[in-house]
Amino acid sequence: MAEIHEFPKTKTQREAEQRLIEAMRNVNDAIRSAAKCGFEVSIVPVTAFATYSADPLPLVNIQAHLPGRLSRQEVADF
Image (cartoon, rainbow, N blue to C red):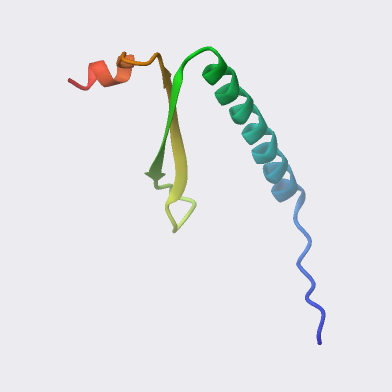
């Protein structure tokens, strides 16, 4: 069977990958910290479009609020 060799990543691609890994660690730590403080955390997927990509970009909106209270953004939407 033939071996499959991946193309090597560029320096920019490796840096972007490392930034995503570090960002996810930070986000997960922040979510854990907020939950320990009694916040309810909601994560909502958001679809964005950019001129540099034909495909939509998957982004997330993360909010923390105390149980039974509306966040400022939710209040502003009324």
